[in-house]
Image (cartoon, rainbow, N blue to C red; front, side, top):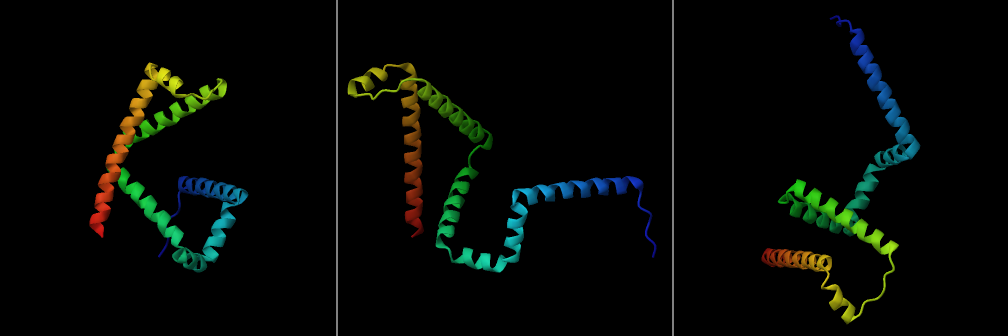
Length: 148
């Protein structure tokens, strides 16, 4: 049974793919990731035994699963936009704080600040978030009680 001759185009594609693979391996070697992966493969059984015995890992996995399950119902585009907005606003607030002179505020200063429209809006946001988080936690606590 004879093989069909390989076209020059296919050889060229294979050569480019091989070159890309070698470049990737070189980068992995330089960064130390390749050595880490090699050690993980060589000591796979020891690693799995250790991970299976570490109770902290199971707790972290349970927390991560809970967070991921909670995000299943979320609109990913809205969640992404909201988290980017929150990060952007927090960064701007920190820049303003670093540029300005922040002073302690007493009760009278707090009452005066509450007349500022931006402060009022920010307080409204925080109260709405607290209300939503509180409601969600109550619902989850009820579900947990039912699981017992």
